[in-house]
Image (cartoon, rainbow, N blue to C red):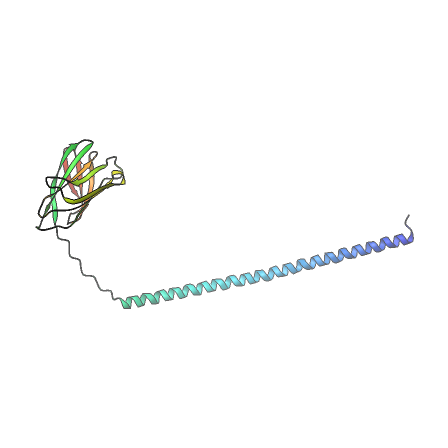
Length: 213
């Protein structure tokens, strides 16, 4: 049984603890309300900053568009639109002279002939031969052939036999003969310099047929 002094001490302790809890709870609620108010202010500031940023970007874009328009007008005024004179066509220096096909070890040799249309030096001759990438036939070689092979010539076969290039210096007034060796019947694309018009060449054991591109 509690005595009167002990009962008073228990009551006092209870009141003190309750007061401390009330104060702590009030302080916690105050902090929570303060945090909510701070969050609200930050949200408003963030929204204001986003609107300001959008307006700034819009103004910058508008200025860039205006500057580009001004530059375009200035360039148009500075450089008048004068039509360029038509370029003179390249004079034909080499024309097609026919082809012969002979069997070789591992394939076919097509001998292409080109005839000069003028006397004198022609300059460097470049010739490119290409087979379709979908075919299994490959280019084996591309070189100058005949009784008088072209001097200072060089050639390369590229892309695993799908493309070949030739470069050489033709002699004066000589018929040019170039040999294209392939591993089988195929249609090749031929392009060159010195006025050679691009064409397709069907290479078969029975002969060669030219088709314009």
